[in-house]
Length: 183
Image 1 (cartoon, rainbow, N blue to C red):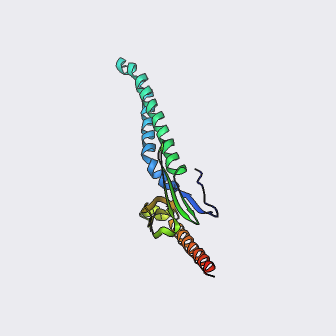
Image 2: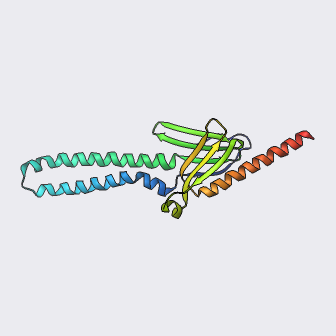
Image 3: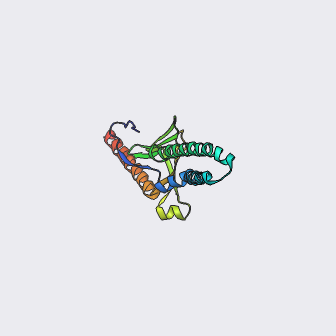
């Protein structure tokens, strides 16, 4: 996704969800895929049975399972696209931006100016989050957005430091401009 930057605005850091976080979100689809594959392979043994009803219904079972596999495979691909590639957190020297694709045709963009940021809170819950270094960052703002949060952000402490650095740099730039205007 291309965002329009203001003049003299540069992207400091951007990130997508952590791969492990995406994997945990798509795990139910993967398990469904495995179960459907096991069911499909078990229907191959229906031909060896002597029951005429099961022999007649075997192609219907295979077709229904194959349709379920295709639907689950498409849902899995869609979730990976939505959760990883189309959801991002961007920090510029002037703004904090969160882009979240909520569905195939629905997108939310949360933007707050860097000078409106009031607090940044980082949470890493669980052994997996600490081991793979991902967590949630919550940016509380004085803007109408209120709070911008991003789950499964890789290295959230680094993002927190970068936001504080951007705030300090922005404040220093403003102070220098005010001093120059007063002279």
